[in-house]
Image (cartoon, rainbow, N blue to C red; front, side):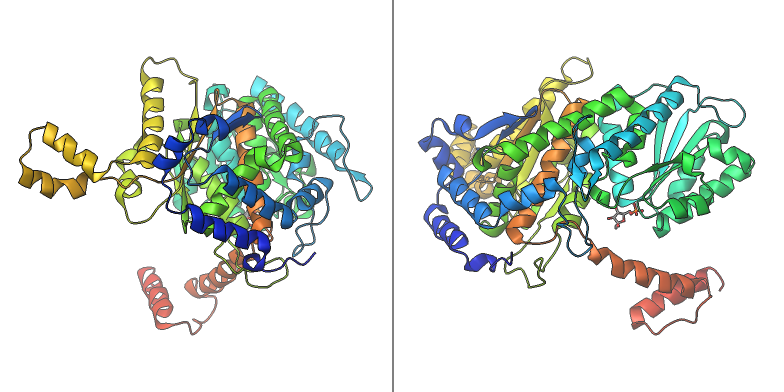
Length: 549
Ligand code: F6P
């Protein structure tokens, strides 16, 4: 159904009017007026706890936002996604990452095919293979057990498994060391090859298309490096592939028996649940990998069934939309207070920005509001000592998602309380700030003279009133991580529905790929330099001169 332009809808206009009504209310005032605010604005599902009370909104705001989501067809589009309809219209594909985490025995028929059965057939192969590598019965070409696994992939074929392997570090096999090579920059592969022994290394070439230039070059170089030590016949013990493209995999020299397939209905950035998650299954074992899938499935069920106003991913999406549209916040900062979630902000960058970094609707009309904010972040407490200054006192308001586990997976005394204290203190400080009067009273109590108080007070004043969510898990278990990722996947989907963009294509990445190919042939001298602009021509000339070309 063709959606009317967002700002012309009655539901959007009701929100705009409501924003005018409440825009002057501060978070301090909202908390003072609503003693039950935390209880009313926090909820849990699938092992995740969300506190959204520190946002500049009221229960009426949520009701109006949910109404907008309904009128944008969220319920119908959600159901269409779960049912396997081709909601990725520009590529003519279904979007079925949710099928990847359906429990065994459940059916999902799409165009006469039980895709859930297909998923479990591949999972069975993943179980057999990962068991062999983990128990040491998968041997390298000269009889050594595998000690190092090198995943070669980029984008969704790298970010998800890399993030999850780090996040589940405490559950990992002690013998297996995981490495990830993504960048076409040879320094990336070089650094990993310097650490591994070809006799005990397994390479996973992970690429949905098996045509991505960076991955293919890294894979070829890794293959050549291996062949300096082993024979062609030995490759089968050291190279496996994860892809949808059997032809290209076999052309590369990897036997179809050593290929773990997935399907075109799995988007790259939604693929960690598929065989692209092979490094995760190798690291933590198939049992924990199944828990990871089960955690995501529990969140899927919550998303599918819970009323919109009590639906975790929907709420997260509605709040983010409110901050973007009505508070004008152009970025979202992710602050995991858990070192093992170090790569989670990077993972979310692709998930969110590749999905909703769009400016036209599904029908090609311009979206008449801003869309996806810039997503960025870093682990606390490190981030506090880097850029939190701007978040506290800078001129832009940057909403924050704080993420933490109530219990650690280590047993070093003192650390976890210190970590959580910082996490909670920061969200409190962002909310309450410190008024100039409070600062003056504080300085006076310290005995400072009036002139010095006048001088210092503006610098020590914090505006506060800065919105944040806090998301807690009990412990960062495989199931909790699965639910956390699924939470953000569905959040991204809901925001795409609100803006009416296709969250599942990524045409914007293409232009750079084509231009890079042209310039590469100019750099190597295969093609005559094209007439670029003077800057690009100048840079090409410098690079060629450096290589005496
Ligand atoms: O960056 C564009 C992109 O297509 C991503 O969407 C994808 O995750 C990545 O490239 C890698 O693609 P592939 O798995 O096909 O190598």
